[in-house]
Structure formats: structure tokens, C-alpha cells
Amino acid sequence: MKESIHNYDDLLEMLDVLLQENSQFSWNNFYANREKQIPFFVNAPDENLVSYFEQGFFHSGRALELGCGPGRNAIYLAEHGYSVDAVDLSEEGIAWGRERAAEKNIHVNFINKSIFDLELEENAYDIVYDSGCFHHIAPHRRMSYLELLNKALKPNGYFGLTCFIPDGEQGGANISDLEVYRLRSLQGGLGYTEEKLRTLFQDYEVIQIRKMQEIKQPNHQFGVPFLWTALFRKR
Ligand SMILES: C[S@@+](CC[C@H](N)C(=O)[O-])C[C@H]1O[C@@H](n2cnc3c(N)ncnc32)[C@H](O)[C@@H]1O
Image 1 (cartoon, rainbow, N blue to C red):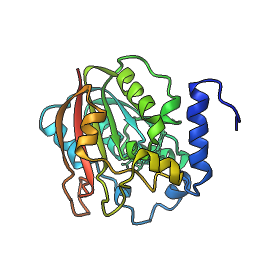
Image 2 (image 1 turned 30 degrees about the vertical axis):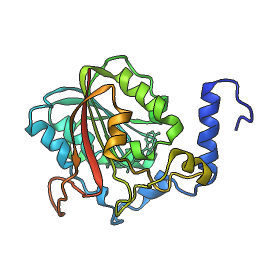
Image 3 (image 1 turned 180 degrees about the vertical axis):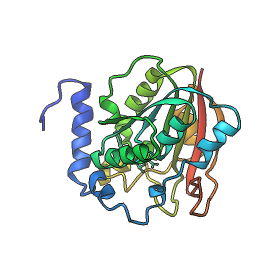
Image 4 (image 1 turned 180 degrees about the horizontal axis):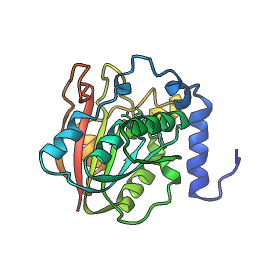
């Protein structure tokens, strides 16, 4: 690790390292046992994603999924008219996604890297979708996340997001950004209020923000009550 800061990227990397050093968590280990009772291990798309097609917002074009994990939403988008790039830093998550896509004979361009290392074409995507990645992004990376989003989306493109409500039953740390660095931890994922989401994405038009509908499994859709679902549009 670099021990001194010469530019903005060095600063971001140093803060990443300070948080990582304090954590035993690894997404590769998390995905190693696929039988674990983890809600989002089901092979079904988010209920809100399905509803965006039903409401006529999503049709066809290019989609980018951030933090796709085992690919359930990327595969749904690819099955429904989108050419999909799906990014995740976990090799295990991506391997699982590739298997799921192959079982359905669906093409998704899976990319195994951090979303912050993507080489993005400007204004290339009709949709950017993020289900459960954003709440694992540290506060010091939020500006980079917004830059990425802005660069990736076409004007009038949609940004779909699901993220933790504060103090939800499966996560959603209700702590300030400063507390993240005092604790040197995101406490398993940050909880967001509706107001905070509206403020963070204030340059975007809000199409809908609502809680996710709970859907009992097995089902062909996924839904848990401790997530926000939000759809924004680039102006
Ligand atoms: C809660 S999981 C959700 C996975 C998937 N979207 C789903 O809903 O099935 C969060 C995912 O974000 C990924 N992730 C976290 N930070 C990331 C980053 N900086 N770049 C790429 N992926 C990241 C993790 O590897 C993990 O697969």
C-alpha cells in the first residue's frame, strides 16, 4: 500500500485500505456456499425491476448493472430486450452469474472488476441498475459513483436502485458518514432515508421511490421489505 498521498486517487485508495484492513469480510467467501439462506441468492429478478417493464419505462437498449453478483437482474434485463454489461468485483459472484446465464442460454457480458475501474463509454447506457451494491459503497466513493453514473447514462436514461432502509431487519446501518470512519466499518451496509436518496441524486428526476414489496419464496420475482426501490431519470 502507498503510504503517502499525491493525488485524489491516492486519497480514495488510502481510505479504502483503512476500511478493508479492519474487515474480515470477503464477497468471494460469501458466495462460496450457494446453499446459504441469503434472500438475494434466489434466482429471480427484483419485483420493482419487473414493474418498470410493466409500467412501460423499460423497453430495449443497453443496460449496465453495478454489483451484479450472481446476475439475476442482469439476466432478466438480457431476456427482455437489453444488451447487458454486468460488473462485480467478486470472481465467485461472476462465475455463478455466468453459470446461470448459460443454463438459460442468455448472453450477458459479465465483467469481473470494481465498478470504479470500469472504462466507460460516455452516454452509452439506457439503463444503469444497482440492486444492493450502492449501500456497500463507502462515503468517500460516493462522488465517484455519481460521476460514473452520470458518465454511463444517456440523457433521459434511467437509474434503478434498491438499497437498505435504515435499521432494517437484514442490515442498513443508521450511522453518519463520520461514524463509518470512526468505526472503520460500513457495519454490513449503510441505511438510507428517502430524503437522503433524494438529496444524493438531486440532479436526477425522481420517477418513483417506494419500499420493495415483500414476496414469499419460491416465486418468479424477488422482494424483501427492508429495501428501498428507486427509479431516477437523467435530465
Ligand atoms: C448485496 S450483493 C447484491 C448482488 C446482486 N446485485 C443481487 O442483488 O443479487 C452486493 C454486490 O456488490 C458487489 N460490490 C460491492 N462493491 C463493489 C464494487 N466496488 N465494484 C463492483 N462490485 C461491488 C459485491 O461483490 C456483491 O456481489
